[in-house]
Image 1 (spheres, helix red, strand yellow):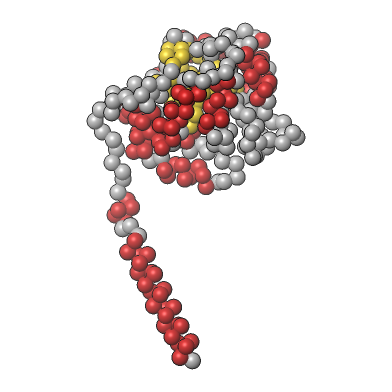
Image 2 (tube, rainbow, N blue to C red):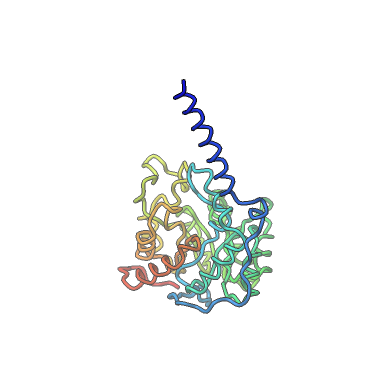
Length: 320
């Protein structure tokens, strides 16, 4: 009996102590509510440079910063919490820090959807940042082009119709709508591109001689655990697990394309290590790679890009 009581007393005292310890370690409500201080003042000086190429006469770093991780588009298969985690990590202060780190390590362009807004980029510019903006835009249901006009008005140097929209327009036989986006973008003095997930979109645009200033096309190997099976034939994969169903054919077709090619989803949304994904993209013919990066990945990704560009075995001529 005494043993039982002693054990109960011990458990009670342990629980009380643990609860008290947890309370002591927990941040106060005031501390939790305090926002992170936003970076201020001029940007730090550049630490390194990156090789660059040209699109429509505009110079871009061959490694470009993707906007998905900042906006929370995780493409995380069935891990539903990842997008929420990304949004919580990428606070206003962290996004500004990411833009600064990218620029001081030689990345001079970010690609993002115009409807996500560019408040952080505008703050970066006010601090003296020179980061260029390639904007994604969608044609609205009534063939409206308001997103393209908005991107130009906000300061984009280049604009492209998104891959999902271009793919659908090609499927519906409305390639003339894609041509109209190019005309509108160029009328606004921006470089004009076409996005694609499906290779058929590039083939159709080439056949129609649309002649964009650049293509932005998905490209990655299938050398990863959740790569699509042979029976999964969609452009995006049944479980959001593939964005380039035919990498070998993509490389063959893009070899004949004379416009600069920006490859995106080169890491299959984080499933492929950068050292392998970057090399596959550049050796497969891409002129630029678009990569979503957290702040702590930037320096290493820049180092890898420079190392890979210095040791390429490439057959497609540089187009940008």
